[in-house]
Length: 416
Image 1 (cartoon, rainbow, N blue to C red):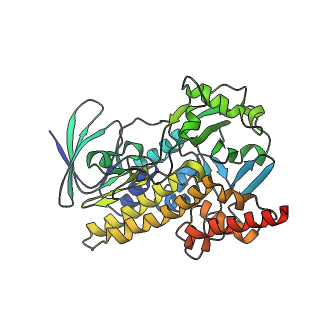
Image 2: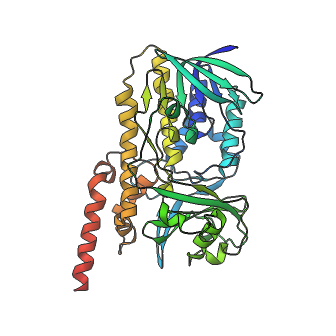
Image 3: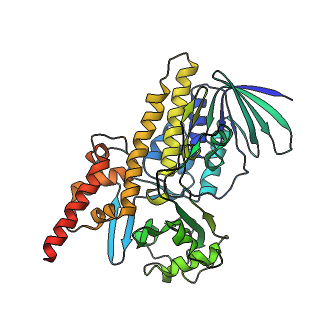
């Protein structure tokens, strides 16, 4: 059995692993990336948020991605019956990017992977990690390649960016339940032949069917649109008596007054994919010689498209800290990595929880609009969840609940 030696081994070639690899390669580090699947492959996470652009730029990936002409995402629309709330990323409290992309992840991830290969990074597809052993910070990883041959890779540091594969959480028994209530989703792509002209047809939209149930509509530049339903698991299970994902999604689209004419009679490009009870967490985000990034650590909920943002944020940060550790510096992984990531996760967790209680929806649709409040919420939705100058970040655990309570009191007094 052969043994290969690298400085840093990265498991997973999605956005998190690719951002880490691109950054480390630019710093002269010998990196190897192993990916279990063969690209292109279909995954969720098709709506990005502006914070990810900082990471793609720093990793040297932005020029290649710009050439792909993905649909630009300038904001997001939230629909509730006759009420519509639109967030424009250029009107946000925090400094940062004003736009990002809406992407078919099969195409996007392939473009990212091809670019890190073009950089000269060793990326091995269809290679599965079957075991990992640690001796101090040094890891020895057993890998079975597409030909069924087994080899070992010895690394000074290991970054697990395996996403839903959750390699180290599975091998090291690190999984734990999420704090969020169990929700499920079903999605597919549709050839969007009824797409309206202009922003009406291309703006990402969330159609609220019930307080905890919503339809996503993510238009792509290739003429297709991703359509998905999200809700409490019992609701999703009840959409089809036969538990048929295609029937369930068709029934969900029929519930949308806003989108039934656009998508109701159109065929699905692929058999709808169901994600059951998707929220997950871990006992720890790092250990001696390794860090967990992206969905291999924690996945929250698709409602505000935070998944890829946390993936690239953690991928970039873990790469920077690992680089310092390899240089002989003392790194406080608890404070500099775990605590930092958990701060951002806590902010988004609050927003997701308050979305499903209906409190955040009260703020979205309150009239007249408060531009100051909206700009601060918009900064959170853009991914700038570490900006503590924003009171909607700093006091996230109280501000939404308190403001929603005041709005409800105002409505009660007006109804008397």
